[in-house]
Image 1: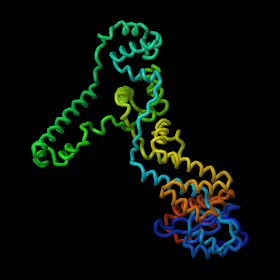
Image 2: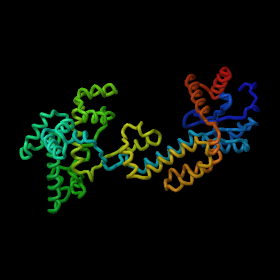
Image 3: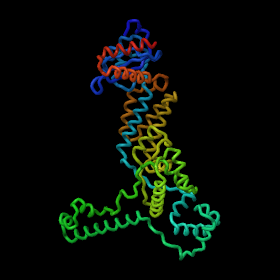
Image 4: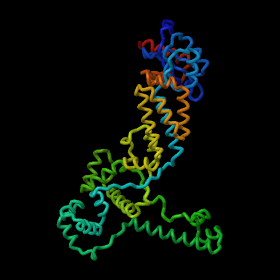
Length: 441
């Protein structure tokens, strides 16, 4: 660095590390908090080296840093009276990462929750009238409930003439429901599988070994063991599982528009303007499957389950609920009800974020005390870390300074490294960086 810089005038700085050779060697960068200028860099982040370096700046009064123990120790040794400020971004990031690790450890990749369905009359009509027989029965039921012919016509998007025709059919003459081909194929496959399971269990009860049964039924021993397991079900666990696709972000909109009587072509035009690039046929297939799902849910509401991706729970640590595509308000509320600890940790994160930017430093100790009540190792580790550095953490709430300048300066340094294609010594890198800063000011 040119000698024209008077180190004794440097009073407020922020420091951060950077990779000289990633995973092998690191350096430290110093930025003036008042002028926003890069002051110096050294090829080390070890405590002893950083301490000697900081001692060459005799009048440091404020130092902003991340939660590094090495930097904290070096600053304390070289300038015991300097005010150390922990970076707010790193504090929030540390808590978020701790909570994310807890969620990953605690929950499987798919979190099971009970299905909660709150349907409007229009949506219920949409699900209950997938074929002619269902529409006729629905019209009869609604007529008994006191609905007028016009109201029934509006619900199922038919004319009053059609409704009168439905009501003229006696209940004894209403045709039976016909299952769609997919349901018939699935039912046939389940019946065939169940016959195999029953046969394997019968042979086993007759004294045949698993190997012998496998040979007789042309299956490997692992399959026979699976059939003999009392908890085994012939229904494929993958059947009816919803696979995310092009239509996934627009499914709720499609259901709502369809319940209002819009045609498939009109719905396709509307969602295409919003970014959908699939076909009209996909909408028809989706509605067919959705009706089958609704029927399945209504037949066994008590035991019906749905799954939420664990990554959606992790995203809630960083994002607002409305910005997460695969998680609805109803699902979120159900998760909080089924797993109260999830709601508690989200509350802790929001409260910590509020305190960090509130200037109310006294509330930090209360938050730490409340957080210690939760038996979560990842959270306890974070609390232990900020408790050891409590003075710097409190200073981050009181003062406006942070490490943003250092983070941005590291990016600038990386650009210069890339311009030189890595063919530079540390001294050349330092000279180019500081010369650029000198020319900029």
